[in-house]
Image (cartoon, rainbow, N blue to C red; front, side, top):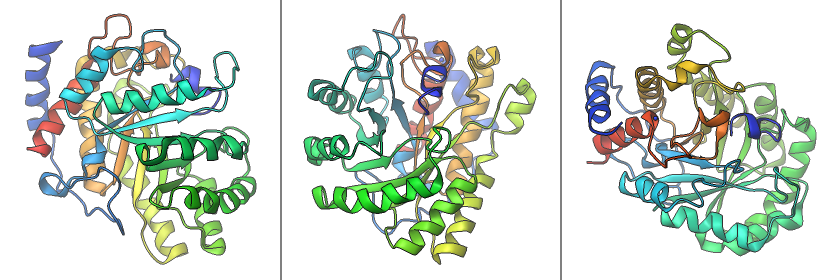
Length: 337
C-alpha cells in the first residue's frame, strides 16, 4: 500500500460460521489451476485439489491503532488456530505515523508477530532507495523471513518504471548474496503499464524475480451489486500478467496477489460492514484466485484500523474476528483437510 494509501486502507461466531458454510456451497467451486512455480515457496504446501496453502494470508501494515495484530495475543492466537499461512509485513525504514527511524526492536516485533501467529513471513522492503536498511533487514531476519517484495506500489508513489528497474537490477543481486535461499518478488503494483514494463526490463537485465506480484482492489465507490460483479475479475488480471510473461519472458512465473480487498477508498463503502456482502465477495474472490492458479495471496489487512477499520479482519476495539476471517477460516478447513 502506498505511503498515502497506507492510512486510507490501513467481520459473529456460530451463526456466521454456519452462514459461511452454506454460502460456500452456493457458489461455484472451481477446480484449482496449476501452481506455476519452478520451486516451492517457503512454507508452501499443496492442499486438496492442488490449492496453494499460501493463498490464505493477510497483511501487517503501518499500525494506526495501539491495539493491533502486533500487540494483541488474541488476534495472533485466532490466526494460528484457523491455520492462516502467510503474513505480509512491512519493513518501513521510517514510521509512516511520526517519521521516527525503525528500530531493531520494531523489526523483531514484526517477526515475532508472524511466529506467534504460526505463519510464514513475506517481508516488504518498503523504501527501495534505502539500500543499507534493506540489507540490514535481510541480514537481521535471516532464516526467519525467506520471501521479500521490493517496494510497494511504486507507480503510485511517483517512482518511474526506469527508476524501479535500476534499483531492482542493482539491489536484488546484493540481497540474494545476503540470503541465497530467499525469494525476491516484484513489482508490487497493479496490472498496468508499469508491470508490463517491469517484465520487459527484467528480461533484458536477466535479474528475474522469483514471482510477479500485484494488488487487487476491484471496486472504487462502486455500488454493492457492481462490486459483487467484479469479485471474479481477478481471473482476467492474472491471465493478463501470464500473457505478458509468456510473450516477454517465454515462460510463466508464479503470480501472487499481496494485497486484496473490495475497495481502497477512504473510507470504503459501508456495504463492507454487511456480513452477507463480505461473505459473497470474499468467497468468490478466493475461488477465483484458486481457479487462476495464484501461488500466494494476502488479504488487506489483519488489524490496523485500515480504511477506518472497514478493511480490518478483526475489530481493533474488541479483538473480535469479523466476517472475512470466518470466510477464510472456512475455506482453509475445506481445502486443508
